[in-house]
Length: 390
Length: 96
Image 1 (cartoon, rainbow over the protein chains, first blue to last red):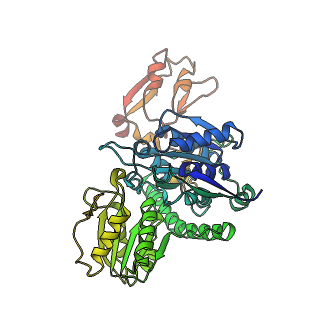
Image 2 (image 1 turned 30 degrees about the vertical axis):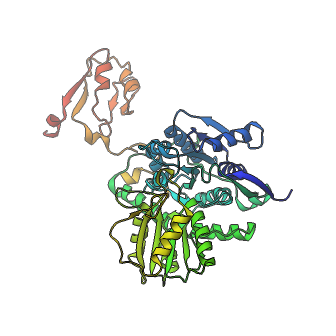
Image 3 (image 1 turned 120 degrees about the horizontal axis):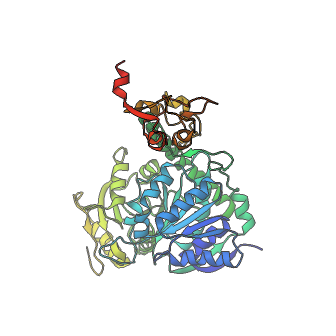
């Protein structure tokens, strides 16, 4: 049986990724917009298409705790959540991340309350950037499926041993259908070896994650940081290997459109899909513009970004997250470019919070407004409100 | 001193169930258990109750207490049916 093209929502694509990766333990608690993902996995198990233990837990905190136990006992574990559920997990996120527990979690990004709402923004996932997890942001359904498979390979690499969050926008990706190539099981099997871990072994009792004195604690944190540095290279290796096997190219920093332009847009997730259409429109109309899509957020690909931005006059960041006064992506990018030989002006636009529509037209207008003369670097972010010029 | 006892995995911390894997816990002690030989019936209930396994049975004799690891919690004194264990101020012993 060859690979097939199916019409799948983002959540269904993720479920296929989990099935093809042969996950063995699923522990999850439903929350919109993640729900249809864990429902689809339960269906796979019920039909016997996926041989896995599905643990129904009482909360997201327990879901991740169950996955930690499973992973350290040698089972490939998967969970998924969104927004408030991710926040309830936070204590366990650190245990998993700092404890070096290989696993994959889909984070279907959703705004954090209040204002209570179910639509996408990236603040939930980005607020977990310090928990010791690798974070990858997907911008279409195919990428969701492919990234789940890659994520296991990255996470389980002995040089890494760090859990991976695969993040994608609620509704815009999770509930929107697209054509998705579903790879053949035997191809995935040859790409992704089976998982082993004997840290938890009834025949070899031990006290895991015991108290340690300051010098040892310091050393373990330093070891995580070293592994995080290595993981950036492993992400690149796995993406190259995936491309040679499946023919689809992924890069930590994706450059799109005309990268030699003086104005470069930047976005993550589904905003980047919209921005790609915007770049196509503008370039067709004779305006030169490029796009940088940040796919890997943790570890942040500093050198790749510095290289990609060389020569540009302005970087226009479409940031779907908020840390009080600035976007989290913008803060990260500003920090990453401090040591760059070439540093463009950074113009930050806050977009799409609480699922507000990120309009093609308003991005077009913004770029056209900036093109004749890029203004001085502003101190504050501009809020690009839906329905008009920001 | 502790790091010699604690086996450390190469990337994440754990300890194996070995003697002293939590360090020299005897140094935490503020009260010292003293077994009064004349009252002890050698029932070994103290050995059974000690949460740290620091009481050592000696066949036909009064049990011994490993003060290297005894934290001085007083569970043994509380459980002893003959009231044969007294908790004395550690400071008193240190000054001897």
